[in-house]
Image (cartoon, rainbow, N blue to C red; front, side, top):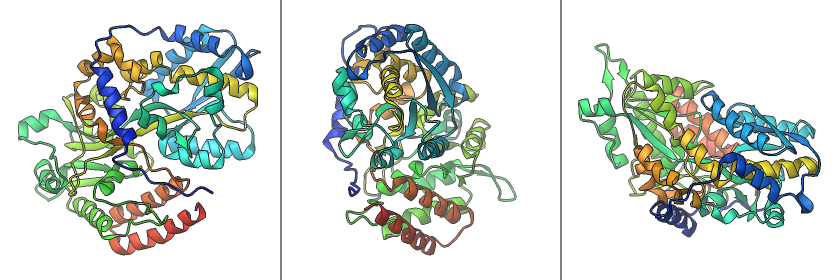
Length: 453
């Protein structure tokens, strides 16, 4: 199998992504996009002939992970598509979190039945789906229908590739940010620090404790249910996670220092480690209720935070590491077509996939969620120019777009991430020895990497 390759933080592609987005954001164009319905009709028309034609009426299912707050938006988008043409009927099905979608997809693929026509996948599943052949290679579809994939920001497009093949398309993308209580910050004179070396002092200032020493307001919350949220804290300290020789360095000196610091903050009660099935919901509720000053989370949930908080919500970039690096990673999801489907289903799925990722619908996703625009041409519209006016807190992301990088691409990543998360739970919640637990973890991860070499 192909050896895993590592993401280069200073890749030309990432800089190109930022430059193209920023340039188009400053464009003087005021053209308005077509309606989603007309977009769907246009997509269906463009695929009317050739090997990828939809020749008979067909119903397909779309598996997604958009939570209940997006029900109306999902229904509207799918309804517009269904009404725009009479050949394809789409049923949207919420499966659960990304890991739930992954489990259902892997099971259906193994069974060879019950597969969706189109399915969402977190960006860190792209490599494993590409390596295993679970996702269809979309390059022939792109070429055969003349689809303009180059309108996607280059870094995002690469995040949807495996081994140079376009096995998925960028859908809803985000990055890591810190949400904080702006009212509390103003009242108490608190500021999210620019450097991680100042983060400990900040946490002590932001934390409030009762007379008995228990914490009443935590300085921040670290999401332990997904390694993506703490992954960049390691990368910005020079930790490779996967070395060039296909071994893991999460037990190296730099990694041990990060893990120990996280454990110390949790032990001191200035932060807590959110883990478990309902960790995301509990963390958010604690923030809404003023029980924590800040949380590390995804920019995609900006609307959710604003809608549920009685105070003004701020958004900040992660503090830079001691190295000076303050890089971030692409988050969110891609869309793919399961390769075991019959060709008629794949053809219909390709039409719907183009619509979901189309530039006219893309801004509807961006406005209705906290996700970023993925299409360069989107920001040339008046709607695109209004985006930052409507959501000024996103300025911290646009100021650092050249630091948002593709994810590490490895067929072993899903197993590696699960193992890492499990050990971090043990370290943070059971207060196990950092060095011993990290050494045990790396033994397991090295075995996983060897299986994928």
